[in-house]
Amino acid sequence: MKKHIDLFINEMKYQKNYSPHTIIAYSKDLYSFAEFLNNKDLSIIDKNDIRKYIAFLAGQKIKSSGIRRKISSLRSFFKYLVKENVCPYNPCTGLILPKIKKTVPDFIDADALNEYLDKNVDSNHFETIRNTLIIDIFYQTGIRRSELHQLKWKDIDLYNLHIKVLGKRNKERIIPISLHLKSNLERYLSVLLEKNMMNKECLWVNEKGMPLSSYQIYYIVKKELGKLTTAAKRHPHVLRHTFATHLLNNGADIN
Image (cartoon, rainbow, N blue to C red; front, side, top):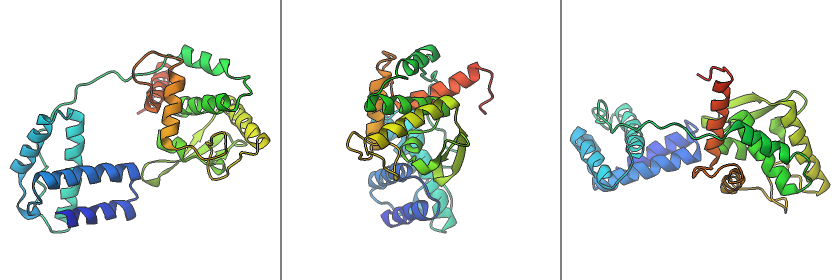
């Protein structure tokens, strides 16, 4: 089974251009399944095996959303195996999966966010300027953390007021930016040039001019949102929800 998992992962990586995060998630899901079935012959795996795996996951206190994601990984894997004539059919087809409890997405109050952005507009402190800009871009564009992390200066077009974002499966999007955001980007750029910390290969750097990691951006957002809310969830995706919520509140159609 592991040989076919490796082939499937390579196809995802080199032919379908899946993101590293997605590939890691699929790998963990599939190798966990292989271990559960003790590398059982793929051609004789049936729906009962999948049901037993679902029951096992539920017994491990895995959330419904986690179980559904793992079965989604298996469904894609077996679809590939059917295409490669390794399996006669996809045993994940037609399964009844645990229902996900619907929750209202977390978001930050617009007034609190705007007050935070206005308060920092005249700061000359490098970290404050950078961190405020990170929050501002998340809030005004709704991009993902991975997309923000990958931004380079060549992706920023201050003249035409847009940024170029590389999203899932390397799909490119052009996102318009406001004059306000342009001003904050120019302020950040000015500080980088003044302190000789400019790095053409990345937009986000620390005080030594070294690139920020994706985790560091996560930590910055969590710290900055802590100044705005006492809610437990203070991660970048909350700002994505906030972007969508405020669009809806202003009459936009986000579908």
